[in-house]
Image (tube, rainbow, N blue to C red; front, side, top):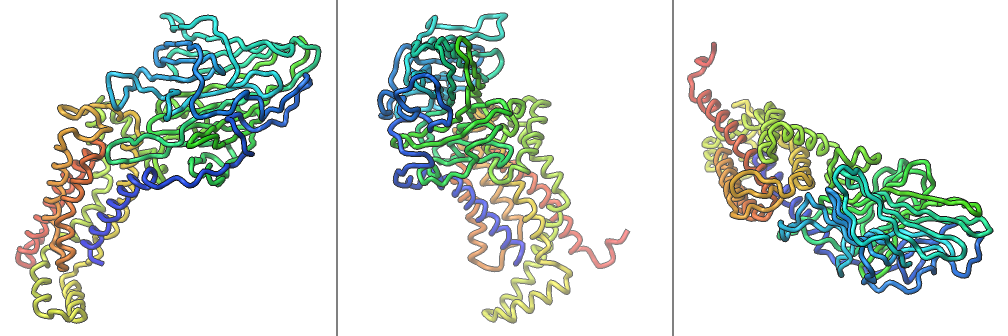
Length: 556
């Protein structure tokens, strides 16, 4: 295989990879709804627990809810909470966290508005629910009452707590608390059970996400990253659980463990329940309606003696996928950032990119400098590839002459070419290995630039106001296409006419395809092309001069 054929193959492979990434998730029909993983139910209450209660019981834990879910959530009185990072709304029905806005992250549709990660509007429902399992204990369908309807984190205060009181029943009272902290997206969710009865009780608490099973498209071209639940345990590490897998019952995560967490992923953002390690827990996922799912974790509260109080608290993270902050919250939480199947390469690349950004203060310049570093790292390999192509270009007239001499006799043509390569000491495979080695790095950097929330709404300069969005005037894609065209002109013309036409039209194909790609990706590709052109032009010039010089004159 000649170097040019490998280049063509790489172009086709990479373009196919991009197209597959864009369309494979959201443009395939979902399978017919089936019950997944858990016993059939008509509501989104978690699976029954093994705990029992000594208090009188008239209903089981799987039938606590008074009415089945119909898709839309019942709205009650709202409690509004404002901190330095979040604007949250808690509903009196169930004490659910129904609405969360991220103050430092703006909506893609309207950059004057905060991004709403949680909301209870149909059809894109996405809320955090929690409750207790046991007869008479409140769950996410019970009514709660707050002390006030508005809370705001005051200057000089590091936290604020919203206290919700559940309806007293069967000799015990329950309060539910949300504690918000300054400078963090972590919210502590706490239950306190006051056992005023004459018998000991035992209960479980559940913490779950209730979500619509389709994520909105990231951009007009439809580039999609994973959206759905994910579980992490020390036993099986990080595991994604696609909504179609829940439909089919094809889930394989540890249902019980004494460590780990459960999250709900989408592009750039994550929500995660983070129970402390060393406590038994049961993970669950369940389909509860038409494209509606729950995913959560059940944790035992333990026995509560008469006249005593029992408490349980689980932190909830709801915010951006910032790798350094996630890594500090829980083991493996940084894995929620979707770098694709080349995370082992992509994660270090982002660390380097982030380090450069901390130095220069502009993500666009950081991308350019990272591209330069990668080019320098692969300079010897690239040089070997370009030297091979330069020698092939010098041999172009001789190869054309052989083609004219042997016509359609491919056997003689190939034999004559091999003899020419041997005589001229040219290895047609000399440029193959360097290109193959660099492919994983190209794909890894693609995922880094696609997944990094830090690039979301990050400006470069001039007309580029958001490196995660498409160039509004398509200037970068056109420049990228021009650089690709110039690069093909520096390469030797393939002897196969069909292959030559393919290489000629590839810049146009890529330019059209990249019109809707994030500007950060196109910037990387354009800078990489420019550096490749400079390197290849210099090597071509030196090779042509060496070939034109009389034999022996090049000695020093």
